[in-house]
Amino acid sequence: MGDWDLNLANNTSHRSLRHDQVFGYTKPVREWGLETFLEHVHPDDREEVSRKFSAAIASNESWRLECRVIWPDSSVHWIAIHGGLYHEAIGRFPRMIGTVMDITARKDAEVALLQQTQALREADRKKDEFLAMLSHELRNPLAAVSHAAMLVNDASEMEDLHWAAGVIDRQTRQLAHLIDDLLDVSRITTGKIHLRKEVIDAAIVLDHACETAGPLMIDRGHRLRRRYLQGELWLEADATRIEQVVLNLLTNAAKYTPNGGQIELAARRQEGEVVIQVCDNGTGIVPERLPEMFQLFTQGERSIARSEGGLGIGLTIVQKIAEMHGGRVEAVSPGPQQGSTFTVHLPLADPPAPAGEKQPAPATAESPAQRILVVDDNVHSAQGLARLLERAGHETTVAHDGNQALVIAKKWVPHTVVLDIGLPGMDGYEVARRLRDLEGCRNALIIAVTGYGQEEDRQRSHDAGFDHHLVKPVGIAELRALLGEARRQRNGKHAV
Image 1 (spheres, rainbow, N blue to C red):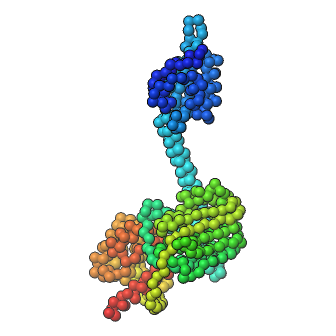
Image 2 (image 1 turned 90 degrees about the horizontal axis):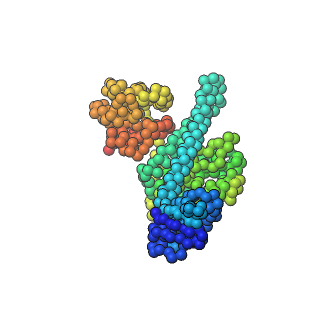
Image 3 (image 1 turned 180 degrees about the vertical axis):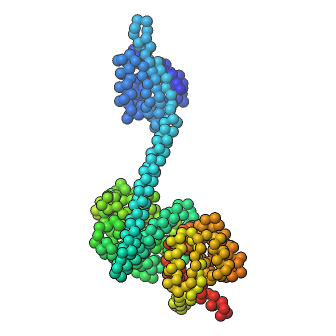
């Protein structure tokens, strides 16, 4: 803090060294009047400072303000200045006396606090938008399933039953996809996802993504054009994750393109990269939104009439997976209603060495009838799965907690145990360990069917003695394939 004494009659002043230091000088300045002071004030603040100074003279009142000043090295600093008129005995006041203080540190702290507050408000707004969209995205499939279930109860024709079954199947898969996306973004952002890289032909991965996105394209009447060749686009990558990237981009294009639109999936080699592009002639993106398209929970504009944009995490997953593979992703759009182009750049890999001709894998054979114990505290889930397995020719029984499962297993000696992990009292991990201690279950096939799908959950189930770890909802075809594979492995061991 410095002090100053300005003679209003001749515009001369007396100042402390600290006063001059507040304005960036290490040594006292010889000449300093009102004009000198105003020259140091930031141009954007100068008019207000001059006005307040003149008003104080006219009103015979003290004044105080905060403003920016420019130092000789061109850096900008904040000061707080306070001045008051000095009255002489005859009523005149030719002097003004005051103090000046450098408040740059306080101002910087205020700016940082304001930015933090704004960031928290923005995060809170996005959280509210996400929760609202999550509720919407969950209720839509649930509503469809509910209607289909009511139709099944009153259905008198097979056509209605087939239609309802198809609806339930599609909407259940949609719910599973939403949950998978949520888990994926959590694993990716916390660094808990592990890539299983191998040299792959990107064209085959693109074909798989197109097949998966096909029903949505057909439902909306979109025309999907493919432009890429097999045998040229080699990547060292996790095929499942690259397919997820392309599928998310195709799904995003389908949702933001009006019915009957055009979508193109193209890929090419370019300067040591595999460049994958998804183009559409849909709603487009306003320029100011482009930089934030890959931020978590960011979505395009929504309206009540068209509000099915997903959770706003798909593009975040796309970006993170691309970066994990040493690549990047870009978004371009000429503007609203002019379509969008998303481009993924991935490092080109050397083609694999030629290999001998592989014998085709034997067709999956249905497993002979087995005794299967289904353990799940959700009564409807357990009974539904048991009925599906019985339709496949197996004998089943159901338990709803760990102790009941152990009692049944000891007496019934199942070939296979389909075991939930999140059980009341004794969890599935402990049940699996105790099953392995039973004489009749040491070689039984134990399959985890659970809502827990993190990498650490899979490792923990493996350590507890599970043979496989499946995440709910599990398709009956997947479960039957595991039963058949286990049967073939047992037969192979006996043959040896």
